[in-house]
Length: 110
Length: 127
Image 1 (tube, rainbow over the protein chains, first blue to last red):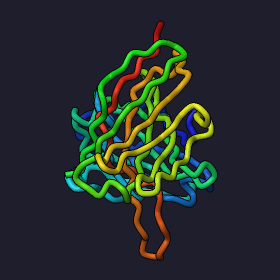
Image 2 (image 1 turned 180 degrees about the vertical axis):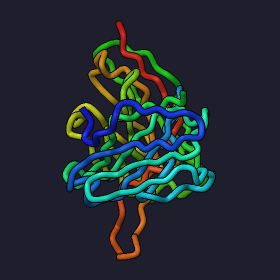
Image 3 (image 1 turned 90 degrees about the vertical axis):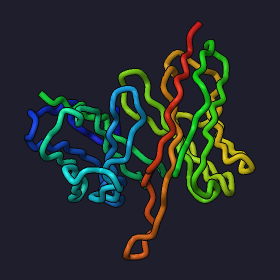
Image 4 (image 1 turned 60 degrees about the horizontal axis):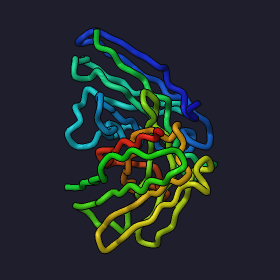
């Protein structure tokens, strides 16, 4: 069971906007930055959003992140077929003195 | 460019040990934390521990304490993780990943930005 809680699945049609939620606690999301990772099938996770709402170079601005209190969310607008992947949220946990991850959300583009 | 290249796949019998490597390039190896994260088949990401190469400081997830050892060789910019007493449920893809730390605008030291990942290696535990 993961420390951060994400919905196991999400879906949308091309061009739609989808959001993925991530819920934590005061020791992780409530007091530290949230990062989001995209994992395409058979590949390593890739940093998608860091420090709550910053995109690394090369990540399309269709991807955005937000955080409020002990929850965070990832939004994907203008959904494309290549966005079909697993998405993970992560945050440092002060109690564990290490990062914690969500269980992952499998995004399907219908 | 930053790269983390991991050693090849391994098949081990229950009770054996495995040592995986992670060679870093494109940055100053000693000043960035290296984390180890594993992913069992069809499952999510599980943090195992972290090492700061410069001082060899380590911190292991409680679940793995006593069974995992993280080391490094700064002369070759390589991090290692050894897992002992392997069980079938240790079958997983093992990733190394770099953490970038920084100070935010209020001067607070920020932890947790894991920015680059190795390609991962599959360790299969089977008799």
